[in-house]
Image (cartoon, rainbow, N blue to C red; front, side, top):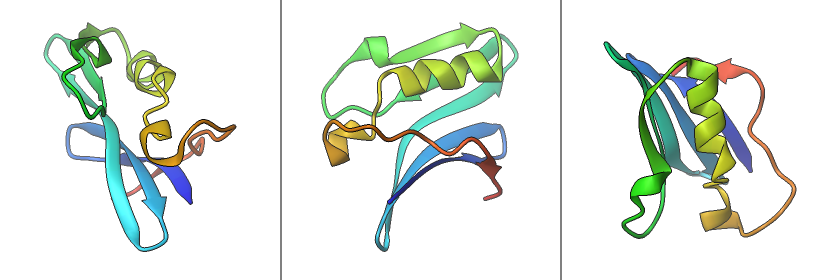
Length: 87
């Protein structure tokens, strides 16, 4: 099991990798108005998305604060890797 950030064309996505399956569980993209961020959910939860954040790190912290990997793994003491991977 791995949780990691991966570069995309306009930002980064938070990925969960379990065995042979990968799932995008969050993301951040840079826009002309700042950084937009979202954390995956299975219901309509608008508070898990935010526009116009001031930096990539602030946006990533926003996504990670929801611990979206717990939707798939349940509660536990796991965290994303510190290094960002190439796509």
